Image 1: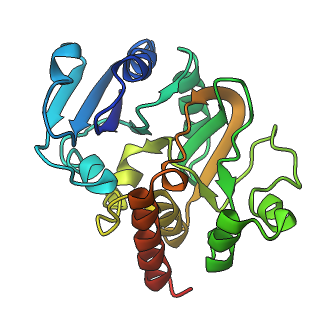
Image 2: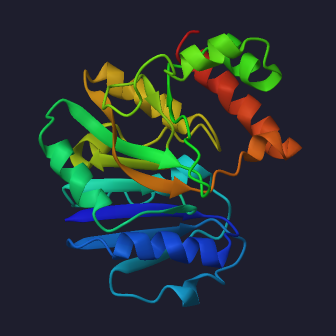
Length: 245
């Protein structure tokens, strides 16, 4: 059995339906948790299904804390952390599960990610540093960005990166529970980088598996909205203080 959780906040209903349908089309036993941080529960009526549990939080509790709401509920073998803006074919999750089962040392697996125009998204990164984050904002060294994104190797082959962006993270459920989910001190941003560091500390790996792919409508919110940029800065400070960078 697989479970999945999607955290919602004023989502575009058509985009979200594509994500939900992608998961529900997976040909194995499953349950989807929709955890709604929106100011109202308008989305609930669109997702009445025996394989879906809708949870209305009543406030914006943040990304990590919302995903953690269902930590005690899930008793599956695998758990998927899923963004509300992705789409994928029915064979993607079974292929990832097969690979995850074959790798005892891997805590979670992620597929190749492309934009709707089929442009490759560089979700694999080295562990972030302060210089790297500044460089990504002001772009003083493309070479450093490329190195940070593993562009010097064949990204059509599987490997174990330091950090994988969290739009689609398929965990072994017990590992996710052992990690105690996401660190709730981050309201938004850096939760995925943080959990990757925690995985290192439990001597397990993260696997990038590009033989299957998903489509991600990447929003790049912190580069478009000043308040999201401030959340990103706040989370980065917490991250570097926690990990002694």
